[in-house]
Image (cartoon, rainbow, N blue to C red):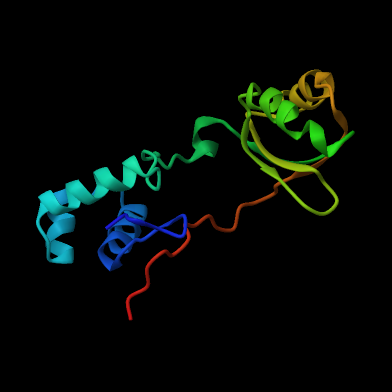
Length: 161
């Protein structure tokens, strides 16, 4: 199943079906998924274990409505670095800021692009002024506040034909 070919994992149709089904509903039991895919629950268990060992599957996440928990501000921060060679050290420092939920190394205008989730504007202001500005290597930032998230979806890794 997961033999490496040219440095890439060789996934078969069943692997992709399992990944797709679990991305849609991570709560589905292995037995139920096995019935849906016409294999045993044990086969699903073995396949998931191999996908985890190869780091394709890295745990599961609970999908939470953050607004209902009081997190009212989502923002995106374009980060300009003094030098691109500072990426690793800056990323390490940014990881310590718990409000930053995603960080990407990018091409284009910004060296890095971060997504940040805060309870309110005061918390965002604190992160921007008191935490980000202290990190050596950040030249400047540009912040974009999200007014609404229209959708958030997973990549379709398997499509029925």
